Length: 347
Length: 292
Image (cartoon, rainbow over all chains, first blue to last red; front, side):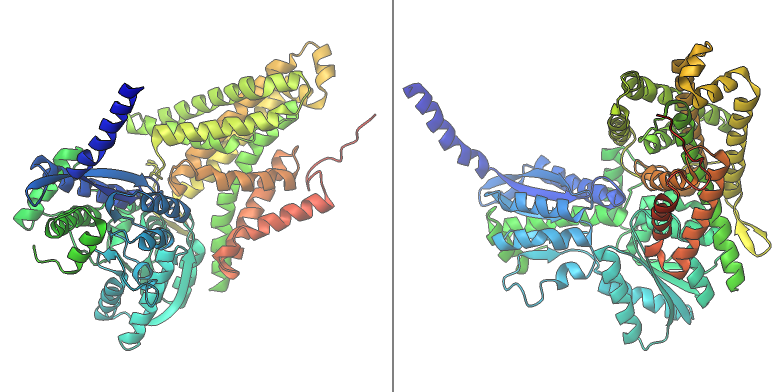
């Protein structure tokens, strides 16, 4: 009995010691389903950064070095899964931070639980405006940060592009998710803000999983749309591009960065050519840093193309941002990391 | 403009409707011989499509892919018959309802684990470039659906009418016990009907995949509509499912244009309820006289 107690005590004592030289970072996102190219790229990009940090011994905190321990959760792009995962993460006592979530709806469903516990989260690459605006007037000491070109910016660029190309009549297409609906609102606002130069001849929505967009496209065609401003993700974007080709509709797709997702490019094939979108990162070695990142990604995961390059780059950068905050905070405590993120000195 | 829109919606809708008809025809085949249907028919469509996709990625020529897909469909049909239907029928129980649903779920999980949850494009040698016929755009791929559906249904109908085995099929459909007395093995005939039903599912999968992409959930919407078609048309008439299938497809397209895409499914459901209320044996069904 005494021996047993002794073991218990040793374990009890050694547990905090173990925790002290590592910190827990959760990565959540859709690793399967229609949003998977973004989720998987984000995760793999983030893990690339984590491996780099860990192979150098970890993040320097005071005299010690903290290794990053990863907790991965697949939210399947489902809002209710996202909420469950956030609840689970929020109940972990020693979690340092969360990076992730691709889908605006998932962010909206889950982040409440993290916010209640004051757990630091960096949202990337979810871009729907609603994932941040939901907090307006609700939370005072928000531990949620976003690291993505949000839809407000993207929508303004999309509208600008349409005006620059001298389009007069446009159709707005969006999916029925929180991301699509918030994107539609951003587009409408931007059109108004930029002087009402575009006439919206049709506003069409569709559901995740819809393959046949004939009805929506015909209405756009009937209205004489010269361009389609679109807010959706890979598979449905591809369905719209394919339907457009079938109908011989020439209007180009102009939309968010989701138009670079691999499942849009693959499923639409040549029908996807001519789509326009703003990008924060392209898979092209234009700087030495980008070159080494792309090469490392290709080598580590044995691929020749990143499914969603923007997501991968943002996942990678988010981890380094997080690591810099940990270093500045001098601790793996999530509240101190939050304070550091708000007042980051370097890089 | 409006007329050409209606024409366009009717054509592309009814071509899609032929796929519902083909899946519904798969229900009819097994119902005729055994008074049972495979509730996992949609998963048969999906798994056969995935197997064909795998054959394509292996680099086989298209005709071999089609043959391979059909063969695999037949095997799956036989498996469903052996594992889910035969014992239940021997005991004259309704256990096949639950068993075929369970087998469908099993196929679904297998597909998710083997091929992943993503939708994938299905390459086809048939052109996707639209052709313009009388103000209506159709792609050769869509036309191939019509050709394929009529070819396979025609082949099976000829087989049923012209060959001895096919006559046995009809005999068991008409009266299982009398057929047995005439020396026709009902079990063998039921087996055959499930194999054929599997082939039909595979054809549906191969035909529809280039249009809808291949994914584990690809058939769930299709099969629901195929059920409506089978019930509305009646479970006896092959001609009936074609007519009702095309009608339903066209109606869906037109509804989604004029009422909004959210209402796409509504006409099918209304039709189903009406049919069940007014003609429970189906529009083309024979009134059943049950002698007691």
